[in-house]
Structures are given as C-alpha cells and as structure tokens.
Image (tube, rainbow, N blue to C red; front, side):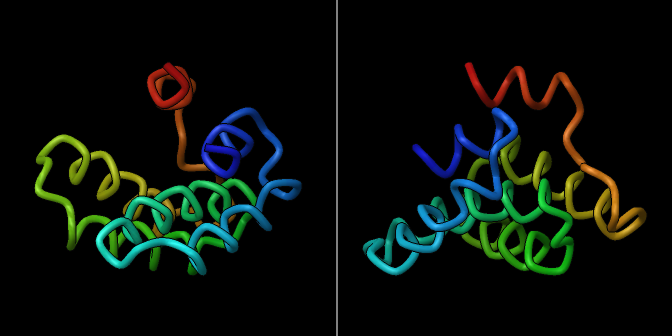
Length: 97
C-alpha cells in the first residue's frame, strides 16, 4: 500500500524502497501485484523500461480484462513517449479510490 499510494500521491522516489522490499518478500502468487505497484512508481520516476517490464508481467498474469487493458494502454503510452507520465488525471483518481 505504501508503494502504491505513495506513488500515486506523487512521492514515487520516496516509496520505491517499499516497492522493492515488497517484491523481495511477496509470496509467488502475489508477486504480480507488487510488480504492478512498482511499475507505477517506475513510470512516475521516468523509468519507462522498468515500468513496462513490470506492467507486462502483470498483464501476462492477470485474468481481469479491464485491468489488463488499462496496463496495456500504459505500456503503449510509455513506448510512444518514455519520458512522459502515462497516467491521466482520471487514472490517478480511479486508482486512489
């Protein structure tokens, strides 16, 4: 939660340690959730390559059509403009509710 919400509230550089710690300690069946959160932090910090890798792992694992489509949109946005934040204000609002 610290990784996810800290990133979405604009502090990805201050919570990345929590993202990494979560990944290190996550049970295998929950790892994609932690990678998804780290992907948000990485994208917001300008690490497009790392964010894409995390979102792709989530897309491959998830069975939720809407979640997969959203991450795929972020991946495409990061590929088109790797130096730009892929999250719209609507995304941020939805993800923090």
